[in-house]
Length: 162
Ligand code: PNS
Image 1 (tube, rainbow, N blue to C red):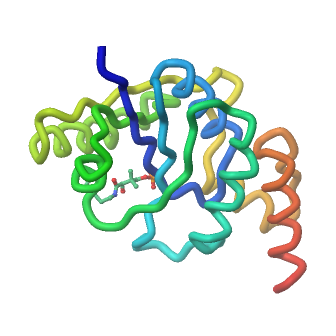
Image 2: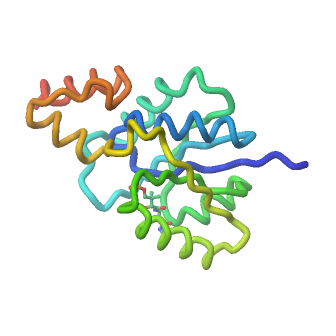
């Protein structure tokens, strides 16, 4: 049987333990997994693309079959260029479902041969999001246990540089 390559796309601003949990699950399910950071974010990111890629590379170094890359434009075009068969996305709670379903069906409309696979992170991470991590950190709260230690350190440096 042919190797299954999946793309795990996202903003990863910043990487959280929920993302990392999903990457570990994906790495066990697929032959290869590419974590792909979107370059043309509409929103103003806290971390540059290069910083987000570095944090992902550091955190996924020990996970087999995982590579980190960037992409711009349509996800389906990037997936086609990589010869990927699947897109991996995480669903934490019901609230994620509507947005994820819409994206999955739109991507299917654009590229019917590409399947979106949803995985659930560990239940202890169901409330963890990049947006809340940034908000907590920027208001002086602790994000210990919500993000990998390297990300925690980078968050500390960001605020220090301001
Ligand atoms: O982590 P996010 O911000 O929820 O990830 C969203 C992402 C990057 C998966 C989505 O915005 C995306 O795929 N953007 C690329 C442009 C695209 O293909 N848009 C059509 C999606 S139906």
